[in-house]
Each structure stands twice: as C-alpha cells, then as structure tokens.
Length: 282
Image 1 (cartoon, one colour):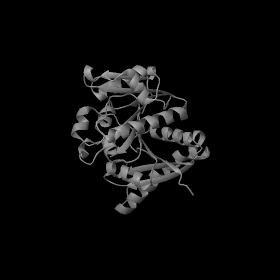
Image 2 (image 1 turned 120 degrees about the horizontal axis):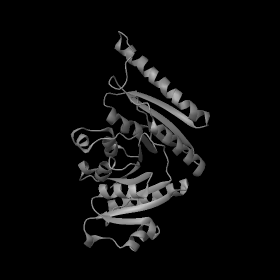
Image 3 (image 1 turned 120 degrees about the vertical axis):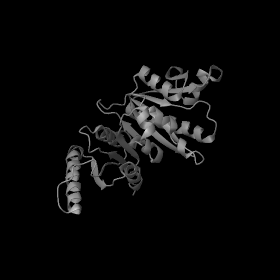
Image 4 (image 1 turned 60 degrees about the vertical axis):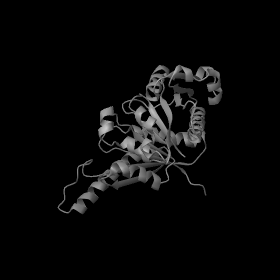
C-alpha cells in the first residue's frame, strides 16, 4: 500500500491568524482533485512555557499535561472544518523548548511531503543577530517548504520561478531542473500563469533571451533577465508581475554548510509573495 502524501502544517500558538492552515488545506485539495492522490493534513504545534500560558498547578508535570491537552483541543477545533469536508487530518502537539529545531525534526519524523508555515517578517538586522525559525527551516528541512504571508488571501494564480544563470556546477544545474519541473507542474495543476527570472552580474554575462527561454521551456514573453543581486531582482520582478508565489531552490553542498539556502534566506523578507523553497542536495 502506497503511503499518503503528507502536508505538514505548522501552527503558531502565539497568533490568531493561521494562514498556513488555509494554504495546507488548499494543497491537500490540489493533490486529491488535480493529481488524484491520497493526501493527509498533518497539524503540528510545538509549545513551551514561553509560547503558551501554563494552566496553574502545583505539580509541574500536571500543569504541562493540562496545557498540552488544551492546545490539542484547539487543534481539534481547527481540524473540524477540513474533516467535515472529507479531508483526513492528523494532530500532533509537542512540548520542546528548542522549538525552532524541533519543527524540521518533526517534519522528517513524519516523512512530510511538504511543510507549510506562516512566514514571520523580520528586518535584515534581526535576521543577522538572531536565529529565526524561517532561516532554521531553510537550513535544516529536507522537504519542500511553503512559507505563507499572513494578512492576505491565499492564492496561487500567478507563479514566479527563480533560475540561476550559468550554473557553475552540477548541483545548481540539478536545482534549475528541479524547480522548473516543479513550477511547471504546479502551474498546470492550478491553471496558473508562470514566469521565470534570472539575474546576472554584468552586461557582458547577460544571457541570450531566446536561449534562456528555451532552457526554461517557456515562451520568450514568460522569461526575463536583469542585472543585479538575486534578492533585489527577484523581489522587483515579483512586484512587477504581481506574483502570488515564488518558487526558489535551496542548495546544500557539504563543503559550504553555512551557505545553505543563502539566496532563499535573503529573499524571503524582500518579496510580498508566498515562497516555495525546494531543497536540492549535492
């Protein structure tokens, strides 16, 4: 019996709005309706004394258990609507003070097909001086990650895929193949438009527009190339095209562990779109 596709949704107990849940439900519907695949919605919440108010009790163990049960009850209520729709829903509540690292570990434990999480907006300074959950995920998660912006309706009608120009080794060539294939499949499933963008360092290295379009397998008017840094070009292109979703690779190579997902980490605070990060291992 084949294992069901698992959509792993991270719920944030410190926020009222759970944009990731709406996105996760829509992904399950896409798997079931467009790809005819079995899909499970896995709701995950990692808690500790800093993220939730503990239920008072002289016994610390009893206090934790009561708090755990209350949070689980909250997840059960969130699961009611998708279950009523016919979606299979699993629930997991974990107590872990190191919640940033607990999330990718839990996704791996559940063999998640995709992880969905609210994206937390931070300044560049905060990202530099403090480890954030989004950056930890990009470094450590080995399944695709959908980071969802809050405060807006989730939609995926206009997709943008970021392609590396003139990849200097096989790993980046593989990353280009992976994200182009995934973006095309997603666009087809959703009936969405797709645009590819790349950047180059100087005018002398500008790619030939027609060759770039052929490399992407897209019409000439659905690709663009601009001079500048990746995060700046990607953000400007996403804004110009009104993109709903950015598809980008997270490349990991054993010889450069600190550079894992370097562009992906930089771009998440620059774009006003959802971001789908696809890990590529060397």
